[in-house]
Length: 212
Image (cartoon, rainbow, N blue to C red; front, side, top):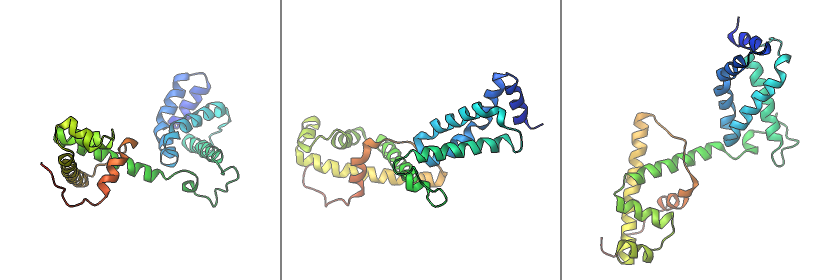
């Protein structure tokens, strides 16, 4: 007998643990079904799918696999979610893509990878360079304020910022190379690094005057 069906029958007979085991077998697949379509809402939709399964467990007659039945519920939950989005109430899923309704998750993940790469590179800089960049871009301190903290003239601070950005770019490039070799990637990050990422994407001016 199909292990899923055996668990389902036990669950119907009142064995709550069997129901938990059944969900545990399939949660990862159901979560993944939603994850790359709706991002942060994936967990909620996965939970809704299993709740709908609880409500309809006695309606499943075994004409297909339990896994297929679960994905049918997941599809319905996805479409219900999408129809609740602005301007999507009357959407035709035969012609409308999910990307038309949900901000591109691929771009979100790509941005998150950039932010994590930035944070890793920052952590590997000499402490003075790391603090200088973070205080300037994340805490918005100007050259004069930084000069007071680092006991240097504003001109010197500008030079140090320029050099620190160059070293940071090199470290980020090295992280890219290391990941390519290892075949590794990451999908975590935060929005707080936007200003520094933008600065790194701009061409650097010729080195300014000032003491190192």
